[in-house]
Image 1 (tube, rainbow, N blue to C red):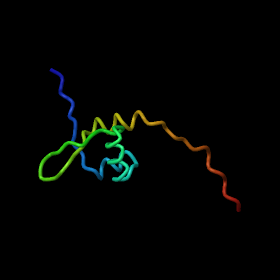
Image 2: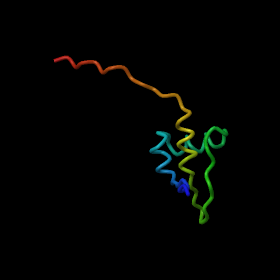
Image 3: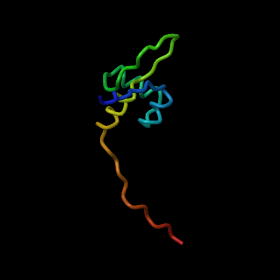
Amino acid sequence: MAEAEVDYLIRIGEVEKQTGLGRSSIYRRIREGSFPEALNVGGGQVRWRQSEVKGWADTRERVTFGPQLASAE
């Protein structure tokens, strides 16, 4: 029998790290409907499903930078 995948619940700080967004940007995007909603886990605390945050991040356009310019000596 295959082992079930685990979906972790993560805090706002981890969401910020994984997305590169600040707290206010995350909540604004939730209000706009363009970011996964938080789950109320009681006691005034919220968490996000890691799979949903990763799925959101995977849909974002990737930005790549060209080679760095050589510094003048």
